[in-house]
Image (cartoon, rainbow, N blue to C red; front, side):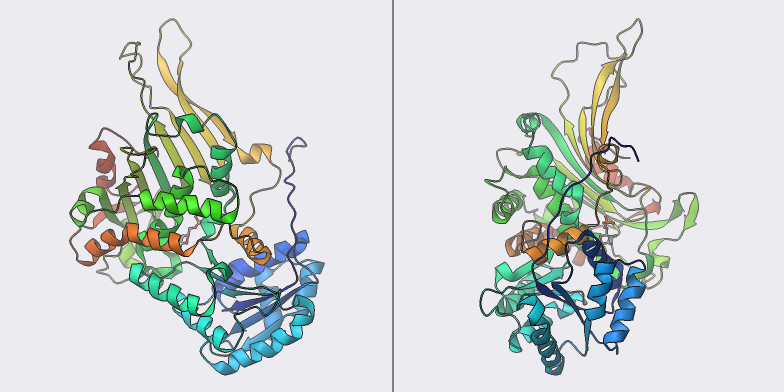
Length: 497
Ligand code: BG6
């Protein structure tokens, strides 16, 4: 690694706390939460003032849980080893008062270290979120008793639709106040999603052109080359609209298009995000088929390897109509964006894994150069690459060296890894530490969740009524032909195609 790279200097320490994982023997705990805690311990962000408690239905004792942690993190460090040596486990059902009584006893013991501060992380199936919250309240474990804090972290999906999210929020609010709730959308933990704020609000150069006078259209792409893997059963009831659009895409969209916040305080930023989401036009039912494309992958090739179609994946109904691809056109009805189409696209089994925002600028009002010599000139575009190869590039036109005035588009590229020493941290590290510290900036407030559901609701309804066609695409392509037509009918093209 080059000596000139800039070290990432960022250090914060969690307060004294007991961190309780519900679903402690599950996949999310082993894959994401425990490795994130291990890295936080390595950094010194958590240590002797941090107690780890697991609760799950798998019959384990404290030692069994400690072994499970070691297996999950594989490598360790002295600070995390010390945390593991004190880790405690509760074996029980999430709806059984006895489990919560055991948990209470353990929390009383760990209170010597935690000072009564508790952060619960619900890594259970989403159907249990409301139930666990209510049981915690019944056991007297949801309200702080003095200066201490008690917080609850949950991760999407927050309900399956608008009505379901309301039911969930009502249950959560019976047990916890909104300010105790930390709703994770892991996209908000990605370095480059946060960098959208820096790019927009720490630079003077972009703001004057970040509006309908200069921007022709905005494109948000979340493309994955993976299929549904072993999650066929889960995905069948989910689909791309719920899995990615309602949450990850809406977060990126809000940060890209919102107004400057009054400060970087959590609620200033969240207020602006919600305001923007309120400006997104709610689609009329009869417009859904014109503005939204629903797709499903058929067999094809990814990296020259044959892959099966969605309906042949394990756990998937061979006649399934679940969408693995969505493309849509949204409108944002406010002074800044009125009339600018916002195109959104996500899918599985697309050619590569890439998440990006492309701001495509308007063409010059009059091109003085010969049409023939400028035929290779593309519209100017600012691309914000969220992953992989985090960076920013600007495409613009130049004269090709030579005797004629031939024009061509070129790109000016900035890549974070060329400048900063450490690779971006996993989103969970950032988000877990923020939840421990109590910084809610990157977490999703109730009103954001509700508004995001309202935006997708007409599409969900239309698809549930089977009034929208399902378009197939070969794996390894950027979705069905209808997705290109969504843009080509107004003379536009996807930036990645
Ligand atoms: C999750 C979805 O929220 O995000 C997955 O449930 C998807 O289906 C994943 O693969 C994508 O996340 P990332 O960080 O790989 O872009």
